[in-house]
Image 1 (cartoon, one colour):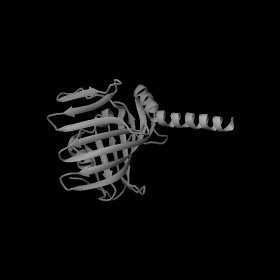
Image 2: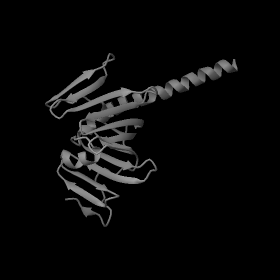
Image 3: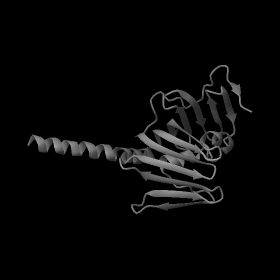
Image 4: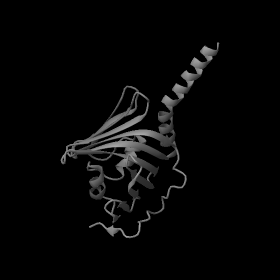
Length: 207
């Protein structure tokens, strides 16, 4: 009886863990906000370089996206704040910051894939791109599986890995990004500063 009980509890625990990420994603889609954490592999095909970073997203749909980037050793590398009217960021190692229009150029320099900052909303919420030049497909379960922009030569895929964790891939001739999400909750992180990005003293403005 004890062995059967332990086996049952183990099965329930595993089932809960495996379904947790998918359930949290659906809850975030409904609430329109969330905290998404991922480990990302970023490949720069042009320079033949790759690196791994931790990504911490706090997002309120159509209002604000904050992204904090750290190294595998948890060293702070960069922070981004995206609103409908302004993109701001700073890079710790280079001691530079940017405040200006929401355009693809400054953001793409970091991601190695040319992309508009607000595309992050589609990536995180697993939401189809409806803009011109995009076409999307669903899997057998009716879940969004991939989107392609033929003009920009960008392909995006969403899938659940063997542990039912969300994996988002971006592929482009210049670079590739694989984001493996290990934490999703349907509300922004407590204490997340979403009203402004405080630039550290001594940082110079990027040209």
